[in-house]
Image 1 (cartoon, helix red, strand yellow):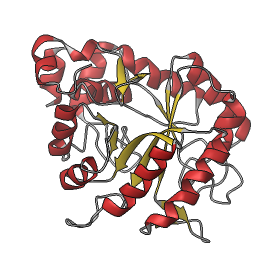
Image 2 (cartoon, rainbow, N blue to C red; image 1 turned 135 degrees about the vertical axis):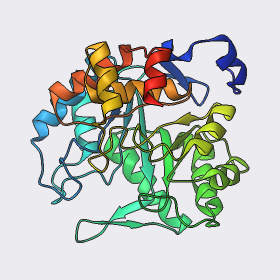
Image 3 (cartoon, rainbow, N blue to C red; image 1 turned 120 degrees about the horizontal axis):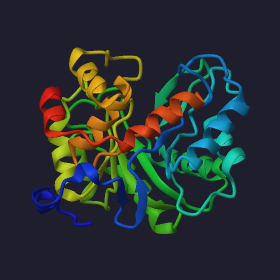
Length: 300
């Protein structure tokens, strides 16, 4: 796949492309799975049944998922159920072709919240924690996550932290590097240090204010992987436009929201998360929906 999608857009209907080559070498299904909701339904919430989480993971693989997004800090409020442990228990030894992405930067605080790691030296223990809890010698993709829900103030440098991850990549501990919660300046700064394979920002059908960065990713062939692709409970995805298109396809509103993400650009990937087998099947089925020009016009 070309590193510049301008010609790709001209000659192909990328809405029909179900796969993406992450970092140029890892072929994955564009509908993946987010592991955040496996340990708990809300970030500080009570633990979910771990056996249900393991069943969801096994079923995800059966349904064709080849990309799982996780983090060592994805855990129940009391810390007794953790996403990485569930992934290892359910799927290790991992099937060929499965790509597991994780992120480092945030750390759990004693009260169950998150604090940002800004010291580059603190990133190595976080990478090693992911290696250990996932049971691998090398991580497929590691995002440097900065800030909170929105990118940090303009001008904050990611260089020192990204250099620390790049050094671990050179050691063979990480295959590909990514950025999360960043802007175009952060992306340019990081790319001057090492290749960036993916960007993970807040973006979905009801929140479309990150198009500048999406365009930058598209031009460079960098995967753009929205977190909270269905709103994360923070945004209303029940608008009339989505409902109209859903009715036309005999689909659900969340399915159309996911299909819209995939139709937005050839580099977008979707990682809907769930702890429900029923929702898992619904989410993965969204990858088979091809939106028409009329649908896209209605959703614009």
